[in-house]
Each structure stands twice: as C-alpha cells, then as structure tokens.
Image 1 (cartoon, rainbow, N blue to C red):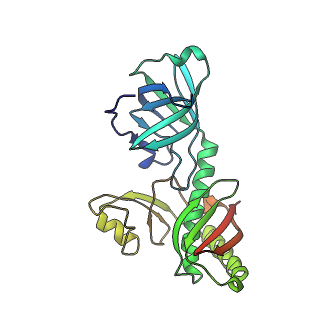
Image 2 (cartoon, rainbow, N blue to C red):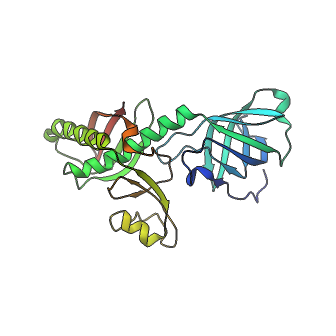
Image 3 (tube, one colour):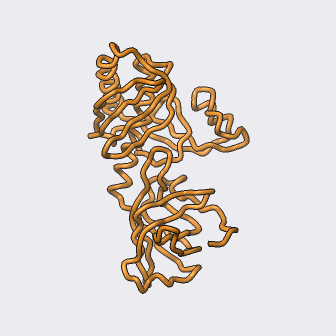
Length: 252
C-alpha cells in the first residue's frame, strides 16, 4: 500500500442511518495474515472501536462483489477486510467505482447496544453513584458491559442494580431524541456538563452524542434515533473490585 494514503472520509460520522453509498476504490491487497483488504476514499462502514463492533456487508460493482467481514481503522484510514465471491475478481483496478451496502440488522443491533451503554452512564449518576467515572464499554450482543473507575459497597449492589434497571426502562419508555453533532470545543464542553476528557485536543471539533435532555458525551459510534428504539434494558450483573465497577446488561 502507498504511504501517502489520505484519510478515509467517514460518512457514518454525519449520517448514522445511511446504509448504502458510493465510493472510489483506492487500494486492494492481501495483509500479512492473508486477508483481502479494500481501502476506499469514503465509507459508511463503522470500524470496530469505542466499544462498538464493526459493521459488515458488501462492496460491489458490476464486475465484482466483496463480502465485508471486519472493518478496522488505523491512522485515520479505514481497512475493509473480507473476501471476493469469485477469486477472479481479485485483480480489480484502482479507481473503480463501488457501491457500499451495510448489513442493516447488525447496524441496528450495534447501535441499540451502544446507545444503551450511554444510557446506563446517565442512570449511574441518576441513582446516586456520582463518583463513578466511565472508562469504556464493550457493547457486544454476547455480553455487553460498561466499566467505571471507582467501586461501591457490596451491600449496595442488589438494590442499585434494581434501581439502575428501573431508571433505564423509565427513560426508554418516555423516549427522547438522540442527536449527534460535530461542534467547536467550547460548545461541546458546555453540552457535556462543562468539561471534556483530557484526550480531546482543545483546538478540535468533537463529535457529541446527546440522549434526550441529558448531558452529552464525545463519541464516534452509531446510535438509535430515539431512546425508545432500545425497547428495554436488563441489568444482568454488577461487579466491583480493584478500583473498577462493571455493569453488565442486555437489551430487549
């Protein structure tokens, strides 16, 4: 691959509900472990990261169809991993125009799980655990959880688990628009309660997600359009030890 590859334009960044788009093929190659890789000038495929699994789907034109099995991002370039349906399709030329199609069911599931994780961040504060600070979440369908710096007394766990679940489902039933905006740093900080994480440069324009009227947070993932699309939330377990608290959950 050429060293001067330009950053991939992230179309999902501005339109989370776009499931088809067109793009130009920049590179096609085999990586070190033998997987086929496509790099495009733009993409609607969300790469794995930020606690969200990657999209899957296809990239095609009249000459070939490429099945996208995994998507990763490195140094602002998005790598689409997968295979061609026909081995003869592997010799495609740079500059080919292609159609991108994201698997709708997987995108919706990932968006619901990801949004539910942010909803729990809000509920943790609402039930009185103000000292817990989010670290990360793994919003996978086989075991999603959100993780926080800080611990809580063991004798509080069962009661708070019930409170968290009740609070989350109350917010889901009421509904509320989920908005995503790319904003100047000061405005983004204001929407997020007056401060942003230290890793966000002060001269940047962060992407902020806001669930209903609650304070927002920086996030590069995809989300539901309204909280009621999560349907329901079950807090399956809370673990607290070694300075961390994990809240495991499932959605309806």
